[in-house]
Image (tube, rainbow, N blue to C red; front, side):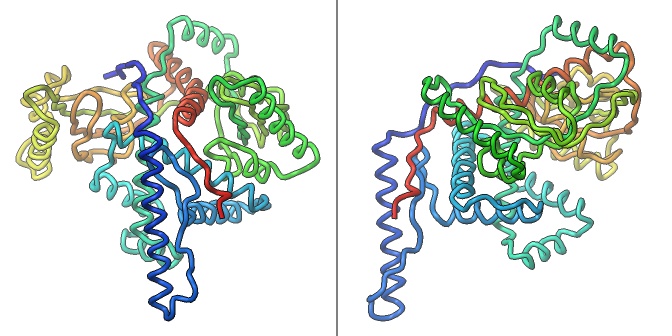
Length: 455
């Protein structure tokens, strides 16, 4: 059940600029009407207070001052929690607005291509978050509200994060290809090294270059990257500089990339990190996405055996077709799950009778799976299951699945599996660079009008 790799989908900018500006005009009138009504209701109509205003137009939608202030507040809370010196107010406001624009562009594309997260899936995700904090769902909700976070707003933010993750998987991760010659070269390198790769804890600043940028635009962004590098050489805090300059999604979190093994970093990063000592910062590095500055926070490893977790999984597949709709396939699995959970039937017997997969004759048994053996949505689902737990119906590019984890184990990578592991490592290495390039393309195709300076 390996991922099918299809070509990129095309996307046209939605709506005309005239229609988007028409929407803006309507919203301005509404905001003004709300302001006047509020003032008159408080007596006399002598003072008019602006309720909200537009700070940016993204395709045919707007971003308001209230939304921007919310993002700024969340970013400031994150930086304070990490004890990062705060950037200038205008810098963090600009970074927060860019983050909102990038998220809005992606969410619009997800909506246009029918990528959604239903309430049941969202509820499961929030329950897992509560469990990871050793809280019941009720206790978790109370904790959020005590901290001033509205539960409904939290739900929608988690829904958006899940959509963005799914979007990256569909548009980037599932479309990365790794050739046999790349695998051969990687295995030769590993054989020569005879040890597991080192791991690096990196922080990162990206100064993005637009697609098909003019020489002047490239020079302007190079100067900006050099300014960031100069501040770092003068002893400025890296996380503060990242929050000020970085165009990467993690910029407002100080650019922290966490621990990454050397073989799962983009080659540009791996080569630069290998030359740094903990605490060192690289000179600006050029890639198709823009200019990068890396800080090596720490390094570890280099001698431990490479141990991989395997999962023993079985599943039931209901394929969709011209005669079997999405709804019918899902309902079928809901009914089968009820029979299994209630003890009326055995999972393997149901799989033999009803699964549309080649594993049906084995009772749906897929054997021991390594990370990367299956498509991301299937792997993500079984990784969240406890042993012997039966999933709700899960959708993948193959159809709808019921799955069950039989057991897990950690094992050294055997010789007959090294090529599969090498393919996964090389895909991971390419993923971040491909994602940044995809984000740049999405941003460049979008119509964005800034209204932040309007007063």
